Every structure is written in structure tokens, then in C-alpha cells.
Amino acid sequence: MNNSPPYALIEQEQLTGGVIYDIAVQVAKELGLDINFVFLPRTRVEQYLLDGTLDVYFISNPKWITAPEIIWSEPMFDEQNVIVQLSGEQDYTKLSDLYEKRIGTVHGYIYPALTAAFERQDIYRSDVKSLQDNFQRLDKGWIDGFVGSDILIHHALQKSGEDERFQIASYLVSRHDIRTAISPKSKVSVAKLLSVINRLTSDGVIDKILAGYIEH
Image (cartoon, rainbow, N blue to C red; front, top):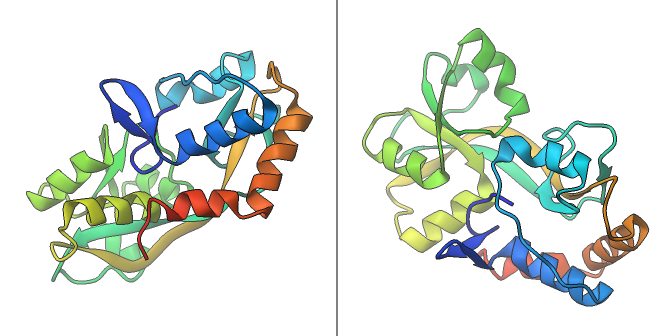
């Protein structure tokens, strides 16, 4: 697994909490299983699912992991990719407002709605390791904005208390659902995994987990 808070809360290289942890613990409890969390680069997630190194990957979408063999749960919740910019700057309201701008991204992440513009270099993609790195670079004026998950961004702003320093642009990059990816070689019954994950979603358990990390 490899995600930012509130999806993953890490202390001393150990996963200690977060949305992924809570969902995994609940699924394991329902199935009577022990769980083991694996840290790995985002670029290896698909291969590790295909070869069975990973049984499940909880926060994903078929646009990011495209191998047809991967098995997907029903949507667990929705997420939006948004642009963060400095407060008081001219609002980005459409894609073309980002042209010739340097936009912060996270290495290994795919942004389907921006891919063509990045490839044409209408927008300059600037990779770093984490969301927090992008906040720091934007604060120093090294980038013109950055793209990220609204869930991760709201959590980061709530924790930092710097809501007034940054603003979320009006331009919505994309909206997508978040699902669990399951390995076709899962050592746990795929049918049982799907049944539990989908039931936790329909019963509102996953929404409750998410709400525990995001203030409204």
C-alpha cells in the first residue's frame, strides 16, 4: 500500500490507522482472517496484484490499474481531483487556465483528465513524492498549483490549520469512484471478499469510516 493521510496513517514505518487500515481490519474481522500490510511503490501495484503478491488494494479505480484480469468491488465512495492554488490568485475555472502553468503532481499517479495536456506540454507536470511536498512548493511559489484528491487535501488543510493560505480552484479536474482491486490469484476467496466489501459499502460502514477522518 502507498497512500497519504487520511488513507494511511504511518508512524515509524508502521501503518497505525487511516481509512485503508480501518477498512482492512473490518474486512478481516468479517472473514476471520489475519492481515499483513505491504508497502510498495505505486508503479508496482498492478504487477503485484497480477502475480498474487497482493491479495487486495483498497483505494483504487479501473482507470489507474487497467489490467483486465483485476477484479473490482462495487464503488465504495466518490473522490474528486481538484487544483489547489494560493489564496488570492486568479481562480482557475477551466482547463485552458492551466496552460503554460507548472502543476504539481505525485510521482506514479495517473491523472487521466490531464494526461493529454501533459503530453502536449500545454501544462507542465512537476512530480514529487507526496502531497505535502506540493503544499510546500506551492507556498514557496515554485509551482502555480497542484492537483490532488479532495479528500486528502481537505484532511491536510484541517490538520495544518492553513485553510486561509490556500484555495481550491473552481475547475474540477475529474470525479471518480473509489473501489477495491482484488488479485485474480488472491489467496482469499474472491467471492467472499466482494461480498463483504460490497456489504460494508451498502450498510454505510465505509462511509462512517471515511467521515471519521474528514470534518464537514
